[in-house]
Amino acid sequence: MLAARLLEAGEGSLRRLAARPPAELLRVPGVGEAKAARLVASFELATRLGREPRPHRPRIREPADVARLLGPRLRDLDVEEFRLLALDSQSQVLRDVLVSRGLLNSSLVHPREVFRPAIAEAAAGIIVVHNHPSGDPTPSTEDRAVTRQLVAAGRLLDVPVYDHVILAGDRFVSFVATGLL
Image (cartoon, rainbow, N blue to C red):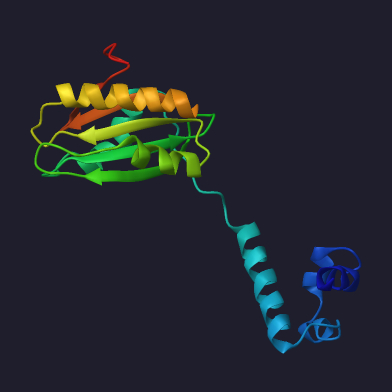
């Protein structure tokens, strides 16, 4: 019932409660100095959050957008990295996740590690991306098998795999663009 007493002190408004001086908060039964300090800090954090602009979320419209977004990070690596782009319903990137970092020419990936962050972000769909340090973006037999496995898992989870993009140097291959997905 402390929350009700605090709202009453703010005449039913959190904004008015936040505008009260800390000494006035101390008059509310159940609010001591420590609780008043936490409330003041919470109100200050909420004020700063309200002023902070929303972060820019890149939108993925085509495979080249994926290459522009992740290419600079992945093109010169000596080992494979397998990444996940969790997308919202407008194809904006909610989160870019490193799923695994592998050896010179392979990266072990399991659907569990791919879909865990996608589910946590409530992603509408995902794009998986990895690099080929060899410089050749041609999908390997393993790449095709992993993609089939991920697509099947995505169907079960209702989190579709929109594409699998392989980056190699300044080149890339999209499974969707090449008809592999």
